[in-house]
Image 1: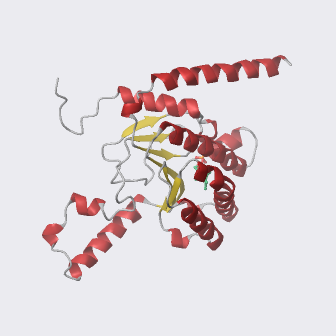
Image 2: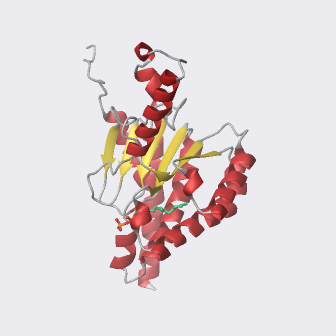
Image 3: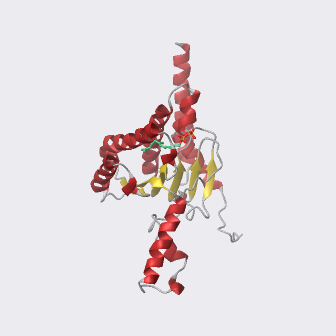
Length: 262
Ligand code: FPP
């Protein structure tokens, strides 16, 4: 009983803190694009004596609440690293669990996402995903294609090096077919041949769970992104953590290699 009451009090405390943070956020200086490496699901589960799959399932709950908050706040783009080109090295059962979870997430959440005007997109080599996952994605793209709210980018079978290699190949073809000159190649042309063409670069990268790595994520796009690292495992990552990250971001001085005029 006592435990139950303490639990309730904690929850009320979190809500109060959340409201305080919400009020402190400057809505005119929100990060336009937030990128998240959703790490720590496996460790979260193992520490609780549970199979890794339950960590991924709990990770979906965090994804759900963070998408909701970004949408409420008016963030323009949220890119979440859900499956890397290297994640195929995991046991077959885990890969197939993650693919099923993707389908379940899309099918279950689609109405709510659509109601909130979220537009679903995915970056990565989608053609290599199992067919049922590709079909669930196609349904989600179709349903939300005209939405004007948050753009939710799921990075699936995504690798930063593969993305850059793809861009080089596409540009080399343009040169080979005499569609452009070598002298036309510049940063803007490269940017427009990335999977994120037309999107702003991430302002804020969040990596929970204590590791300090980029893990082959958005290698080009993160050049001047502010990093926010935390020990919290992704399944424990709640709205309050995102609010803390945004507030911290708003206190930073971004110079992009230049100087701030005083
Ligand atoms: C990394 O944690 C996480 C992943 C490889 C998968 C991320 C997936 C989710 C958060 C579920 C939502 C996904 C979809 C497809 C909607 P890890 O397993 O590497 O954790 P560890 O470093 O503790 O082992």
